[in-house]
Image (cartoon, rainbow, N blue to C red; front, side):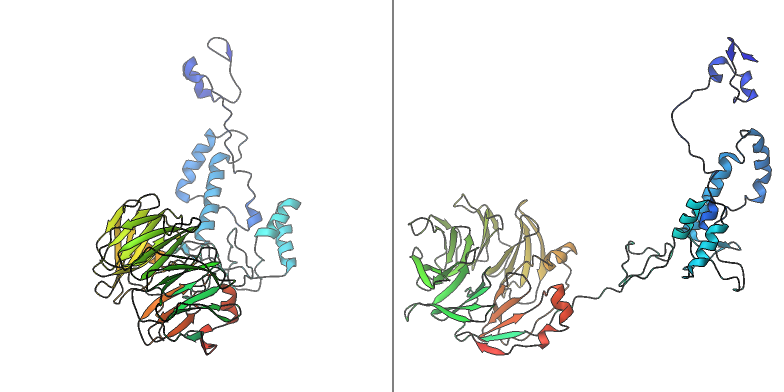
Length: 501
């Protein structure tokens, strides 16, 4: 038979196509591949395709005449078998129309697995797949029909199982190993070491404790500065200001080799810690220097005379620039981690932000209602600044200096002396992510006077606090995983009290 136009009729076209026009009956071929699941071997997975519903038997028999002659079930049978397989994998086997949670396959002898593999109609490669994915055969002595297993379910021993499924997901569907319940991190509540620090001043506006990157703690006691080596516990007297002067602030350089000391007479001295030798003494302030901050080779000092001085230790001048703006004593200074911005807090309840090239403050915040001494830049988010107020304020406030916006406030219920962002665990940032809900990780008690000084060890695991009770207490609040495994309670093994001088 020939189509109009003497076009040969393809042998695979149905006869109904003859009634259509030549343009409509023309077959368009493409390179798209439509897979067929007709030849899928479901016996490899111990699953058999569900029979079609009785109501659709007539429709399937009528549609069989429209299938291709060599289809042997065609694409419709393959899709139905695949749907039944997918339904079984996702929702488990069907027992009398009621969904039954799939059971975990039991570990059986290898011979049973080989027997089930050999009984499948697949060849050698199919047997290998059956041994890899199908569970062991159910014993014939068990009553009732054998429970069909899921396709990718297997049993294995996992020590300290970890769940990789999202929260709220039913792990029983996919046979995931349930993880252990989450245990909150235990923070030791007692110090592991106490140092007596006689003459440690009970003054909110001073900064007398700092910990260097070389693991050396500097403490100003009266008119002297002492160094405590955390590795050897050796105490060294660095300097003595004499009877006419006293120490008001200490600050380590970023490399930890030099220590800056601010005095009550307005002087700033720089000492070589390794040789216990004074390098230079600089003037410029008329009153005591209570705050210091390093930025590479630039040392900034804040004084009761309301002035901030930038000093370049590479030059001979006492200071390179002068910053004015505070109406009262400058008691807090902190450079950002990129050394581009300096935050200053004063007894005038003001928080200023300065850049490194200007003598005029670029940002001014007046929300605090008490002196601002506690200042900390976030090491995790650029421009995120935290500041704490004194007794009349009792709040930690968060600012975005990039957008010049006030973010939020967290009430502490007490005077805020110092703030420190923990670079490893970052608890303040976690609190910020939770919209600063009133969540306290731990409260450390032991001091009998208000805590005024705080410093953190170079590894970020230990903090030291100083108070008006003339003691320094060391807390291992962020121990490494190794130390947590070796000691259950670090605080219980106190090393006793020793003198720092």
